[in-house]
Amino acid sequence: MTTRPMTTGPMTTGPAPPRGRATVAAAGRLAVPAAGTLAGGTVLLLADALGGVVKVPGDVVTYMALTGLLLACAGLPPVLWQARRMPAHGATAVAGALACLAIALAGSVPAVPVFATGVMLAGLLAAPLLAVPRAQAVRAPGAPAWCQAAALAGAAVAAWLATAHSAEPGTALLFAGLPAALLALASIAVPYTVPAPPARPVARLRDVAGGDVRAALPAYLAAGWVVGASLMGGLHLLLFRWNLVGEQPVRHLAWALPPAVVLVVLGRRTAEAARTLPWLLLAGAAAPVLMATAPGPVLLAAGFTVAAAAACLAVAALDTAVLRPLPYERHLPAAGLTAVAAVAGGLAGYGCVTALRGMLAEGSALTLTAVPPILAALAALRVRGREARRPPPFLEVRALVVPRGPVRLRRIHLRVEAGEIVALTGPGARVLLAALAGRVPSRGKVLLGGADLASPAARRRTGRGLCHLAGPDPGVPDALPIAEGLAGRARAMGAVRPEDAARSVLEVFPALRGRGADLAGTLDAPERSLLSLAEALLARPGLLLVDGIADGPCAGAAHAVLRRLAATGTAVVLAGPAGPGTRALASRVCAVGHDRVTELPDPAPAEARRPSPAASSTGGPAL
Image (cartoon, rainbow, N blue to C red; front, side, top):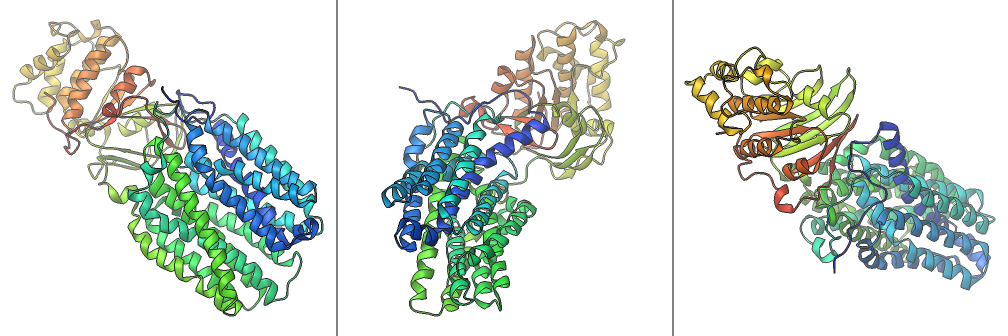
């Protein structure tokens, strides 16, 4: 029996979507994490007030909410099992909406059985919210930080609701649960623009519980610890040191969380580098010390801002460094395992600060909770990220900008290894190819083998063997015989016997054999494309750019040549529609939008997706 892979909603395999539609899709993916923290955070922050309504101590309500969180962790294995059989994006939205409705139900009926049932049911249904949004976010640059910012924004709204309706906690749960349910449910209608994943099932938890994921678990624990210890300990300190009662401690939290959201958004680029992780954990460790030594409640509330922002950015940095390099099918289980670690850290931090308060003064107890994040910051030095683990790529495009033309590109990044074949599709694919070839003005860094490719002019790039653009228009003039034109190009490149070189490359293509005396202008479009590839064989470039000639009547001959060039270490970048032939040829397929390059999951077998064994070469003869 076969199993279906995890999918994520309506998907396409064509070009990247328009910028406006992509923005709407990204906003839709942020709705679910925001909805979850909005509903769950309202319950935790109104625990004492809800206890008065339900007629149980406030601590009991807190324990109910934390038990619901544990049930969400326990529900992750069934989520992974179910993700093999149904779309995870839609299932997460529905489960999140039902969980938020359960919270609303818990607040609508002031009875212990109804309240306890609603909270526990919400915890069980919230299991996908711990993993699926993060598993989806790691596939796009910068998205992990936006996901954390959305969750933090939901918590900020929960704090404001808890402040405004502290006298009517049931109403607050209704106001939190119903909009959160609508928010989660509305994400189903958002066009999710990541293409269909490989035809492989979601991996199991035991398959991801080693390597970098295991090394990163202490850092995830520390990020959760910072939230659990600092936020809950800080609220308690406001109550007992500064005599703030009722909704006043939560009001300080409500004022502190929006700046934390802003810090996460502004600092999202720091989360793209694993080297910032120890510093983020140290910032989280400084938060409880700031709270314990604050001379007033306002500065103490600033500790909330530091703790929340540092923890969220640390999780985003961990997701980027640890989860993103994993194969597609391991994203969801790895996100689930690390979410459990973060939840466990939060519960441990909350329990530790509670236990220490029975033995030490409030400030001393909170200060001691800074020790575990400091130790975790030292352990986080082992989390080096994908960039630190692999050598520099043969071709690296950094923040490339094409300011004019039919499609304008903004801050495009791309990495291609030597001997790798990468296919580009989407509205910006041909513009990016033209920029790499020097045909259109551009700004940014284009490094080839560590050298700046942008400095030589386009004609000098080809003459020096740096790169070659093969397209529908070959360089041989139409009025020249094919062999004579190729011999002239071989002579210009320093060939000792240019006529022999021209004949040898023509022999590679069955459609061009015996036609050396024909004029180049007599060739039809597919044959002209092959002549352009023949010129590439003569050029022996380190980087071969292929514009729209990988598919068509002569695709077999073209693919054979491209594989031979890649086998010698030439990096090959194709631009055009990502048809089945191109997908079978390329090791990666990427969609080029206006401001990003998104790698598309490739359904080809794993063996066809590996770079050439000669990937360490920097170019060489193609024949």
